[in-house]
Length: 262
Length: 266
Image (cartoon, rainbow over all chains, first blue to last red):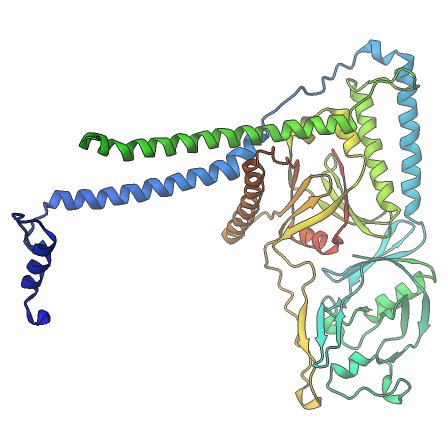
């Protein structure tokens, strides 16, 4: 059997078959590779790999850094500033300067009119801070709590995202001793069955603090029992404040006052 | 018949041809890439350049006067802000002379952040003043953005089936450690890069910024390559690169709507 032959024999058989007569065959083990040749091969491979890596690196740098840098090399002529006296005395120049100055004054006036002298509230939902302004001056600032960005999902496919809306709002209603009417998600969140719309279990007293201000779409600015969470994003979309800040804001803002949330 | 020497030479010639082809492509790519800002500049000049019309009143070019230019820039910036203020949306104003970035809503400044460092594309910095002022007199709208942080850090929670499964929420982790870097692509071709910049950045933050920047550069290269391969001059995108404190950068990114608007005063 072929397999019974010693390895050397097998090798000879195979090589003799593929060779024309007269060739001298040697077992690879018998062939002596000069040491320096082996080193040269390894060195050559390392060198080729290194050149490959360097080429790739150079190409990456060329395409991603060098080309964008080349694109920034100045092209074309820059506006040459002369400030010539002759131009300044030109009636047309004076007319245009007067026109632009007038436009600027008009635009500035218009722009300044956007910031009201009345009280307004600014809420930063990223850092959970509030700023109360009156006569364009900051009169109070502190911590608040805003939406948690939690998405509550049920197996039936209903879902709610608890985030505070951003943009410009205005106070649509002011309530003293507000009662919380628990929406569906408040029951779903606790694994409770959802009661009917007028069920007494929907009403909770004293959990929203002494005051609440409505921003529309069910969003409120109100107090909280969980004061240790102030400054954190933990609410279901409303803005929570501590008792003193809530009272100050409630008395500063009137119906129609602006609330800016970002 | 090819001799042995010729056979040996063949791989050498092949390598040489490949090298020449690569070199030719690099030269071609470079030329196309260099043409891009020139074409952009010409397009801007055609769209926003000063047109002399003797029939009209107040129609002479005084852009060689610094006082006139300064007023023109102010007017452009105000025009942009007024346009944006007429919406109820949150928008961003960048004032380079004041080194500030402002978040505004309906004309009211709600957040101001200091610019620690900025860099402008040459076309914005040193282009024709009249053209650039006119170009910037309209606010630019965000079309796409790439960011290292999510716009809305949503956490999904499955509702418990009954009260036995209910678990009260744990206190959220408000530790602020994530690197904040983002790029906003505007409708007018401008790219706004906002990178975090603290007095002491961790080595990890530096590495993150480099990799974030590299990923975007690679994407830009692929976009350029696509154009070049079909013999089309690639689009050139002027840039505004700004470094802000991390917390401010985060506030701005989270506050800006998906298609928010930006105005620049330089």
